[in-house]
Amino acid sequence: MRGHEGIGSEAEAAEAAKAARAARTAELQRHLSAYLELKSDADAESLRFETAGSLTGEYADQYRFLGDPRLAETTVVVVPDRLWVKGSQPSESSAERDMILIREGYMHDPSRKEQDEVAWMTHELAHIQRGKDVGEKYAAESEEKAFGDLDIGTYPNNKVEEHAFGRQFAYLRVKGVPRAKVVELLRGEYGPEDFAFLDRLLDRAYGKE
Image (tube, rainbow, N blue to C red; front, side, top):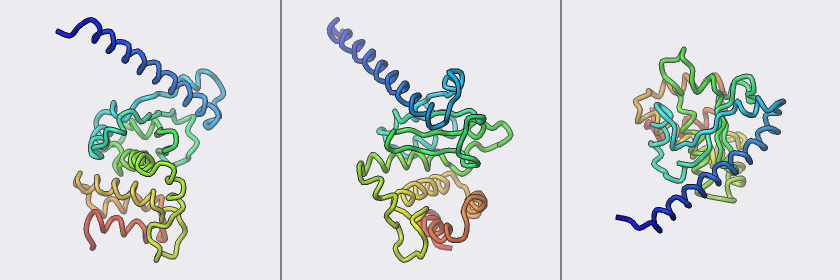
């Protein structure tokens, strides 16, 4: 049996972790109040805070696919549709804040048979992963071309997006989503110049057509 000292130490550690999570949540709430231009305490309280390691269903599968325990405590904030500020974009991430925002109506859409059909959660988690991999170089990588021979700008043709889309496409391939279906799902958001970049990452994941 463990001694009382060991049990006490575990309890203290658990309390410290709980306090740290509460402090982090409060810090993120302050940030999001400004970012989302929240008008009331009720708006702030309507945000739901989860961690990547506690995700369920399809989202848990995507978290597990990356196999990175550093992502377990990444904060996932579920934002009500009425407070969403990114238009048709269903999610976004902040590597600096170790945080992902996802629109509630997208995350839990009963009208769709497949949740997150194009695996945006994998994409956002991969952004966080890249931030942990490269640290302070993350911002510079977001401006560094992934493929220098492509005569297009640095979005999405940059090192950060190369990693994020690369992991996203790898997950979709493993899940059995055909390449043609991935292209179909992305066509509404990305144009021909973007696909000059995306097609190279699809080639890596699926093989050249």
